[in-house]
Structure formats: C-alpha cells, structure tokens
Image 1 (cartoon, rainbow, N blue to C red):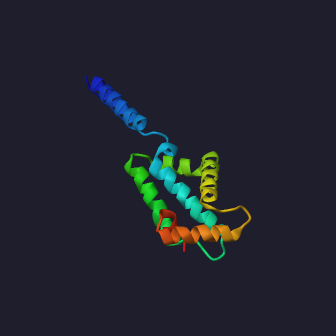
Image 2 (cartoon, helix red, strand yellow):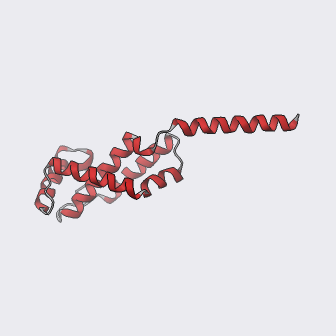
Image 3 (cartoon, rainbow, N blue to C red):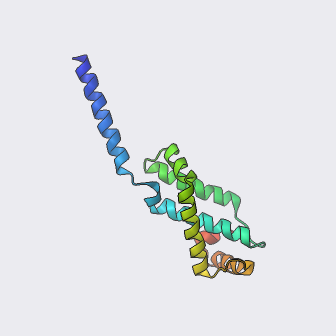
Length: 134
C-alpha cells in the first residue's frame, strides 16, 4: 500500500511539474523581458557610440534585475534565465533588432553625432531608453 501511495504521489508531482513547465513559453517569447533586453542593448549601443552620453549603470542594473524578477515571477528558474541571456544566437538576434530600431530612430553607422542626437531626444522624451542613459 505504501508503494502505491508513493508512486501516486510521484506521478502527481511529475504531472504538476510538467504542467508548470509547459505553461511557460520560451523566454524569447515573453514580450516584457525581450523588449527590456532590446532597450538595454540600445542604451549600450548609444553609450558605446556617443562619447558625451553613457549608460546609467545603477539604473541599468536595477532595470535588468527587474527583468529577471519578472521572469522569476512567471515561474522561470535562474538556470532558464541564465541560459536565455547566455544564448549567443538569441543575443545576436536581439542586438540586430536593437540596431535596427536605433537606425529607425535616426542613427547612422559610423556617425557618432547621430547616436548622440537620438540619445538626447530619448532622454528629453523620458522614454525607457532615455532613462537608461545620461
């Protein structure tokens, strides 16, 4: 009898665990996290290209911590979050999106002033991007 109860509990645990895991889409499909990483990438790109602007490091760390907390709140493990952040293919994809969005805003590769202009406009508008740079 004890073995039957143990097996039933094990089976129930496996079913519940599988249900929880199945409920979460891949992190790349979680809009809040994905868009946050793209915004952070845009801020880093502006900071790298424009000598007069830089990333607000403490605010940036808090921003990224919020993204991680959001993912944890959705049930993702630290290992799942780290695997997503460390995925080189996904990182390249998000960097490409960030660069395209910056180009859409008016940046021109090789023209540092265009990055400064876009950065200052984002700061003045108080956008999430603008709040990550100074």
